[in-house]
Image (cartoon, rainbow, N blue to C red; front, side, top):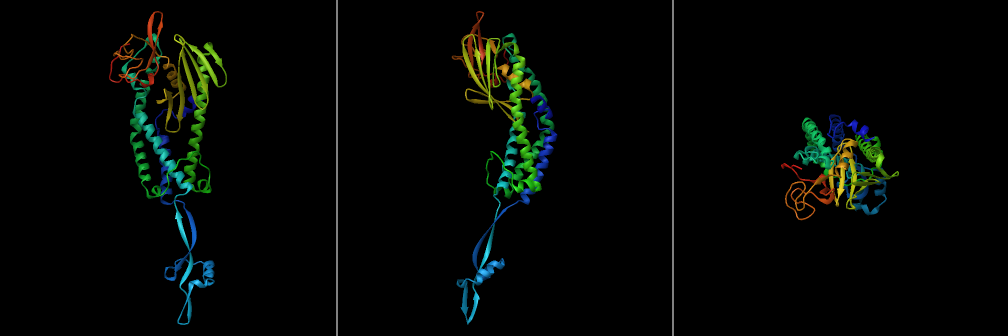
Length: 374
């Protein structure tokens, strides 16, 4: 499922095929910005004869029947005013609003992906923290290698990516886009122009393909994750239904509810304390990330395979040996079950006469430029 789908985009970077596709799309957008479709409205108006510009037989007949428009001078009757049509061009059409929306969304997604790939996937891993037998935190060390790999790819594609972003910015400065209202679309419906005009149709097809792929991939990601969780923990399952799943792992009970996102509750049996998380995904041509919500805050983590997602979930079970009044991670003095130095939040519990701390937010730690020994 997700492995197969993500294998088609073998990395999280904007690979060359994707960038080439974007480049072609921008050519079509450029064509539209210089030869756009308009709505032409027509209204009758009465103008002085010297201002008459557009001849129309039907309106000339109407003029001849309207005595108010004629004057009599020197025993001669002639028209002083005439009917004509006034034509107004409206650039702010549905189709042109869609093109503006597509280009703006493309820019936002590319910039977001570029910013994420510029950063390390999980910066705190460089601190060399290892929790040994007390937790699963060390399993995430492989992300450090992945981050280095992605950094190399970013360097290879950086110039191309930035050149496309410059093209997009230049296009958005075009007078055409200044005359089109900026709107968001929950759904785009087909029109004759979007289906039949070469340039508009290319943009519409591009939109549909990526929207459909993104929706399908997200559904497959959630379903396949449930399958993976069941397979890896089949001997410890407590509850197994279509949209509900729970299993035991060490000192914890993990319960999952599947909807359009995943609701995860983790129970630490030793102290009967439960912590809730939400797991959602944003997956499209440019951005593939897991959105982890904890304490009403969202944290974004890049993903590549099911295994990445699984290990992120395992990292939520991190426990470390601790001492009262000392942060279990940065070893600085604290007064509560949180540390403003490294951002860690935790719960204490005892196991075999030893104090431990359950780290609740490994994804939000700030351990940069520090050397910790656990």
